[in-house]
Image (cartoon, rainbow, N blue to C red):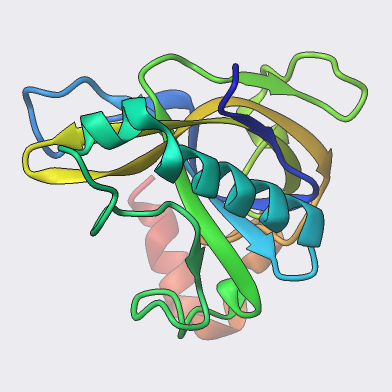
Length: 188
């Protein structure tokens, strides 16, 4: 557990935490994944991650994993304001982010530490704490520090990201003519 990090309040995004996401590479196992949005105001979390990365870069075992040098390794903590894919996304503005994954299902908890079993209770956009495990990797010509997703603790609700919420009241009959409604009845 030497490379374990517990975050402060961060936002869950791209959450595949109840069932694993199929891997693009069919030879690899499906993974549970999440993007962790870390507000730049969450200074303790950012400092803890940066400190752990610095320690890992100096560890002789990790340097050996990387082929004798830490030069050119991928670091997991990225600045969304300068990332070419995230800089236009308003949900990532003023934040850092990390992607985490695991072949094992992460433990999912509510604020009171009871287990979450309903997928509607933990979603992209809610605010959580994360238990993460950083590890050195060298695979298929790529080397760096990966992030294992160990556990998530939901602290509070947030604006859902991504999918649109639709209810029965979302439909506007003014977009239909009376004849459309009557014609539809004859088919049923």
